[in-house]
Image 1 (cartoon, rainbow, N blue to C red):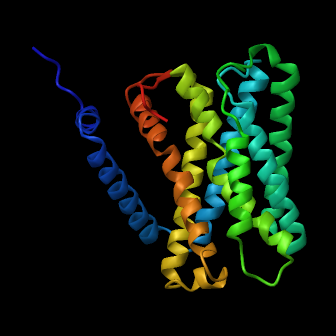
Image 2 (spheres, rainbow, N blue to C red):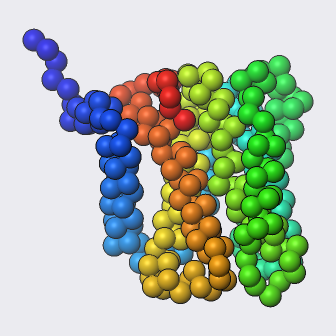
Amino acid sequence: MKATKRPIQAVATWVRRQPPKIKVFLAVVSGLAALVFLRMVVHDHDNLFVAAEAVHSVGISVLIYKLMKEKTCAGLSLKSQELTAIFLVVRLYCSFVMEYDIHTLLDSATLLTTLWVIYMIRFNLRSSYMEDKDNFAIYYLVIPCALLALIIHPATHHNILNRICWAFCVYLESISVLPQLRVMQNTKIVEPFTAHYVFALGVARFLSCAHWVLQVLDTRGRLLTALGYGLWPSMVLLSEIVQTFILADFCYYYVKSVLGGQLVLRLPSGVV
């Protein structure tokens, strides 16, 4: 007799067989359902931002463990780490000159760990770095973000250079994970610690996006007007949504792999 599939496996199989348009529709519906759930459960939506920072910290801790214990950086993108360092440096500059707060300290800690990861990949673990797989040209990301920041940036009372820098780090953060996804796309097989790290990024960015969306809903759009006028408020929200959906496909296969008891994540063609 043919073994009966578990409900989760049956649903995953059904979803996999659907055309792309249906998959996009299901992803949007799932995201909206998650937002409704968070709005009912989490009363202070600022806690979602704190949760996002906490999950991001867990992901970085997993990454540090991989580099220190396994002595390998295989599967990691140096370029994604460098992009992360760039937008963190710019964001810290903006924090110091525009609005110094607790997030400045959190970003400082994240920058220090990111710089340590870059050092480990470039020097201590260089032999295990997959340079041929990490082939995304980062100027394709940095230059468009810089040009977009020149055109669309906050309309606040701050210095024009500071406002452009603020916009630049928002745009760059939203796509900084793309080189890491390219590495995984090239290798097709993602080892556990790298998968855990990228999944943590996906969850953190979803929580951050949920924080912004729910804040906009709670203030009935007043938050967007508080950010300025023109296209900038919409671009902030769009950037949060983009960085969530960039990782959505990977997170689906990660959850499917974990529920199936697979330690190594194997990505089908076309994913990420």
